Image (cartoon, rainbow, N blue to C red; front, side, top):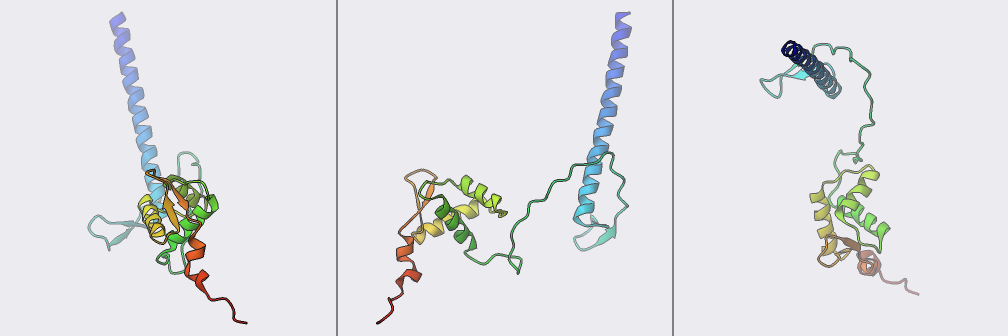
Length: 166
């Protein structure tokens, strides 16, 4: 009696597991279909090459309404790509705003993301090194923190203009 009940329970558990797997697989496939239809509506790249494109099958109706999330927006210049040195200028402004306290690259990246700008940590470090070379920023001791160097305005090329003659 106990053996039969155990066997029946195991069969029911296995059936529930299979149904849950099938439902999860169907939901995952639906998410993939929705994502690909948003990226390139009515087209799906073929597996044979980059250039060939075929018509996609019509997307199935979603099983349940999905939550929509606002996509992250990044600022782009009119040409689609920022000019050279733009990252350093943006990071210099952030260091000025947070002066005189030291700022870590993660805090800089967070401030950039709050402004809608996405920059990798490698680019942030590169920009900080550029600012250090121009004496616009300085690393705080042996830490990974940086601060704005106040003496920059006095040594900038714009500050070296001659006073008006009388």
